[in-house]
Length: 228
Image 1 (tube, rainbow, N blue to C red):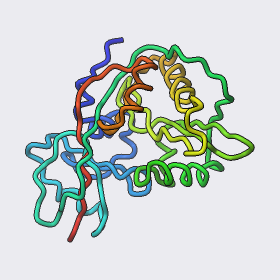
Image 2: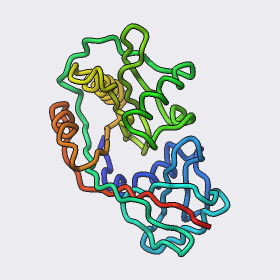
Image 3: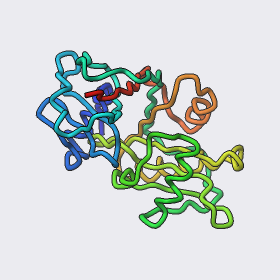
């Protein structure tokens, strides 16, 4: 099946129009994921979007993230930070073998997932984030030491996200094995994969290239805040 990777130029909007349509809040032109699930917002046409259309679904002081092109910000919004990232894609199974037991995580694991992602990648994972897709983990002596899962979903394409390993357990290949599991599971189901990481994270780039991911494009995560 031919994957329309150009849809990933505006991944949040495309996800909210397709697989994640049930999560969409907003208007015909500007939509977001629910607060507490994912602080992402997308626009049908960022060049002409009026993001104040989303005001009824936001609160003063709330931060949201736009991926890709940044619309013009009205006076009641401000830019908090710009994260320059790399987007990669993959359509093949991983060459890495799974050695550890990979666990499918569920509701009872959410407190541990929040603790781990909050330590390693704060600000991107919330109580409702596991509603977006399946998350997996590795435990050692009962402790959740590594996690990864599925975040935004566009027709035929799944984003791998929340790839986190506890600092005391890095260097053991846990992240590779979790990403491998997600890759192999989705490729078998006919889905391609995509992911994002900060462009200065050479370690992540090396791991993903080893697993078969290919560079697609640079892409920016814009964190904005509603001031009034």
